[in-house]
Image 1 (cartoon, helix red, strand yellow):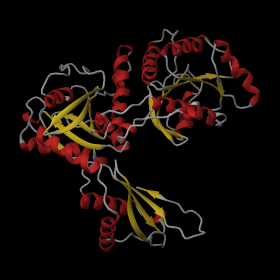
Image 2 (cartoon, helix red, strand yellow; image 1 turned 45 degrees about the vertical axis):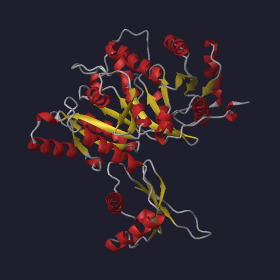
Image 3 (cartoon, rainbow, N blue to C red; image 1 turned 135 degrees about the vertical axis):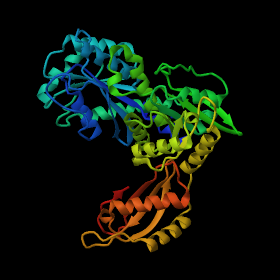
Image 4 (cartoon, helix red, strand yellow; image 1 turned 90 degrees about the horizontal axis):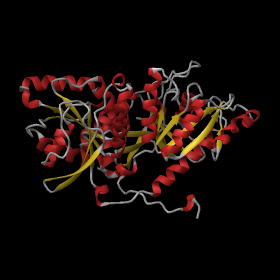
Length: 470
């Protein structure tokens, strides 16, 4: 039986099933890793330059190949033999990415002989006990393929000659990557906990995440210390409150990039990847913030990642027992200014130390969880849509007024809707925002992102028209 026909056991929990595999791109400096990263991501996200060592931190993107989505990680140039402190710091991040990755793509330069750094990297990858695909880059034509096969001298089973710049051979490499995702899925099993709402507690170090989980559990299960960065691993815990069960995930604090580049912080670098993975595995994300410090730029970035993943969002302002009502109102206004892109996220006042506000937080979690899974019948949706059109019709654009025919809900988790229209490309973004806000207001989709896709209704024989997503 081939790997293509092996039976795969999939999770029935959409949040669990949405956990994306992690693919790390590694190799020595100036072999074209960032160019390959951009090719996989279908965007120019990473800086590409002929100067070695341009990429220093890890760079993340969500990529898709053959209908399968995954998290792509670009790493700095790996040179374990270098005494340069900067390159030593890069090596820390490379090792962290290797440790957390599901699949590793090793990139070499097909136009030059293998170096000692290439050989050292191959030895490191063999010890990682992870699936590794070896790509010889800059193979712009078949004439270079013979040079690319020099990797076979190191005992490599298969080499993929590619040109990241021109796209040659990249499809074959992507197909090989996806096959390893299938092998990973075969190891998945189901348990009762996979059907429970999963809530990740994220935020900067020392915001009170572990203290909150200890308070919910009623015991000091998580290590709590005033020193930032105490939590290193993402830890799952079953919480039962008011006859309801939840899986809470305590994650490591995610600090600013400039604070995790030292060689001594290899474990923390790994914690960042684990925190990102926990977001992808969850239905709801609770962003913990110190009410005195407020929402920082790094908090907004973390929340933006969860918003892009389509997760339910809650903002928990901690240590509010030390604030007056007036001070809390100011803190809430400041917080909403920083996260204006996720204005739908409710803000809850809590104190992890005293337990104040925890009942409200649990009620909010239950409400957001219900909204995340809510399905509205098509008939009810279209009665709502009629009222929306009576209140406000789409504005005319380029002398053409788009017609909206009907709306239906395509899926839940997060709520996703499809609107059939005569000219979706002419629907202004302000009207799309109006429809989204009306959906949220009418059906109570508080705390969850709403996806609305505008599709053209075609007559028989007409070519497919452009669509517009909101």
